[in-house]
Amino acid sequence: MSATQTSTQIAREVIRIEAEALVAMQAALPADFDAVVARLLQVRGRVIVSGMGKSGHIAAKIAATMASTGSPAQYVHPGEASHGDLGMITDQDAVILISNSGETRELADIIAHTRRFAIPLIAITKKADSTLAQQADHLLQLPDAPEACAIGMAPTTSTTCTMALGDALAVAMMRLRGFERENFLAFHPGGTLGAQLLRVSSVMHTGAALPVVREATPMGETLIEMTAKGFGVAAVAEGGRLLGVITDGDLRRNLSDLMARSAGEVATRNPRSIAPEALLSEALGVMNTYKISALFAVDEDGMLRGLVHIHDALRAGVA
Image: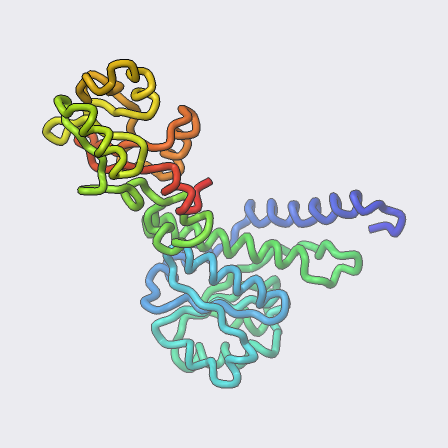
């Protein structure tokens, strides 16, 4: 990199160097990759991931990604491991150690621990002849690509490749385990991810909370039901089957002789509805598109199962 380059030129060069390394790794994936995935899928305990310095930060991220996608995993700091945390690593686990050089001295105690108790050891390193690689049961060798920093020493390309390799392991195990959206929600109940995966059935109002009247119900009684339940709508149903919906708009359109009519005469027939198993974000999309504040949840047989209000979606964090 030249000292006369602009910051934009430097950025493009860094990304090019790292991208070329990723392409090289994709074209020549480590030979042990399939064996490592198979080994990790058999683990009855946790996948322990460790590394020192920048490799440690990547190790923590890999452990977090695995844990959130169905593969129990934990990051262990090598320094702390040498002072008691080796007890976190059991013979039910497998260990992934990350070291670009394969000679990181802080990893020595973890390496020795895995050898002593026959714990599977997977090495991620650039050096196939390093101490770490030679001691490991499986080697995931990083491509022999230059670091992207100006002096060729700061972990840049190597950490990018390591993170990509960790993602590849996590996603491969995720798919082979049959880990689905519902499983993902179980590990992400909070925040935007969890909210986006919530289903209508998890927040909808049911049973006695539903504003429901029959076709022959006088509008006087219907207004009482609508007011009591507080959603601004009422379902017109017979035998549990949704036939129509009464909204504030229906009331205004029939204002001149409203009290002389029945619920069935005022209701909008074949109203928009949502399946209980639909995503809450989908329900919010329907409400926003058609400028309505509530949707009744109806199953595949047309039976009324619940009601979801726009406030339910907003309270859940779907916006």
